[in-house]
Length: 273
Ligand SMILES: [Zn+2]
Image (tube, rainbow, N blue to C red; front, side, top):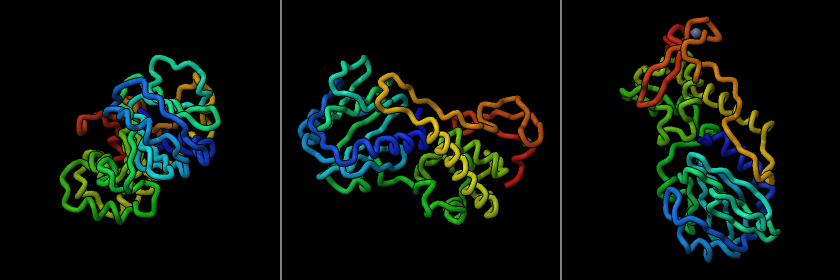
């Protein structure tokens, strides 16, 4: 599944290619992805000039003259910028056709992606209005986590993965950040100390920045119709390393179920918090 660093990398790649272009038409080849693909999209988007390519959580926000396209890659979505005359493949469900003869083509085998149009303030959109701050914004820091964690009995890992607390911290990044901060993922969020939350906020930023740096070096050519993005080949220290020695102390990495997800930690290094 594309995570926040992957989506941000896509945004950075697309922005210079899309800004200033005008959408001439929209081709819909499916009735729905995660939600219906409304036929009105074809008339709503035609003639819109693309002003900015933004991101909020894992939504790409293509801001146009009179509204915003919300685009989500779901579980398996891939975007390519290619000639609109290239015949679509089986899972190519949506084309946003541009005035230069190219199109932004969404391929989504599992159909959990989304393409929506919003003509009002996009920050107030039901999908976005309850989201927590961006993890790489100034709003997100140790003090913020301390404030939001007060009195919470649930595991700190689930707290960190709650999109209402902070967006874009999936299972992998939560596991890695908790390891670096030396916090037991199962510890009740309200029992984690202020010092530990400062370390955790910094660790979240570090793991995301590292992933973004990887993305910068492995950024796909959006004109390549056959490219397949995946997880960035990041240097994971606990995630997926069950039974392997901890990179710090050599203790075998443990896996437990937390909030229905596999949770990896070092029982030696992560006893604090
Ligand atoms: Zn260890």
